Length: 271
Figure 1 (cartoon, one colour):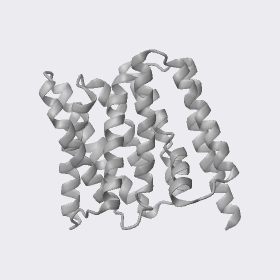
Figure 2: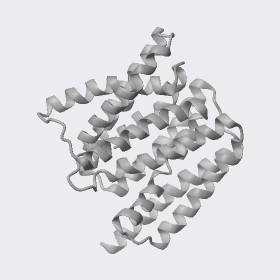
Figure 3: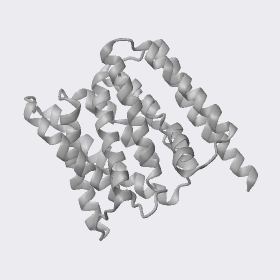
Figure 4: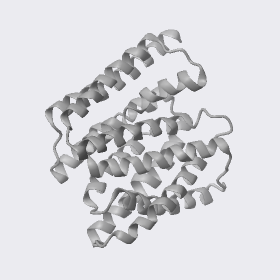
């Protein structure tokens, strides 16, 4: 789980380094990832399954991939990853709406805290481009919640959803490559890193890690991603986050991590 989170965190930097549209980048990186995931499935002797629940998971994977790629081109990498990190809050909301789970006081407090942090991003990005990127990043948090929930769906299979999600992403995105002209070595290298490691290997590690890692622990470990992602972009791409958005990032990340810590403590008390 830790390695998956680290690999996910390189996405912001690599996407910034590639001078293509978000759709073209996502189409190419998921096509490369399909090769990696296909080889993995062949290695373990499995064929990707397919049913309605797997399709819902696949659409969640596809939506997360596309929205995050486009958002990274329209707003800062820090905004994109932290707004996507609102996913645990949407998991709570969807659990209430679709699984009939009543929210606890802690759930509602976490929702309020994170939403307050999200609002600060929109205050700090009033330009049309920044605002659109923030909205898409927030929507990627909604679809990312579906990725986490696909393991709880009946007759679901995480790795199959990942496979078909990448198929859809590649089919939708590859035609956009026709509009691109820069195929330099740096561009292709960053693309290979994205496809092989940030999408392919990371999703494999995630699907395997979730088999033996409790959800609370997994959520805590994934907190490295929204912290490491903007740091890498700031160091290597020199893109800095605004002071108000930085405050919002602290609230969002801190709120989600604190929520999971308190859940872990409650579980320890109950056991």
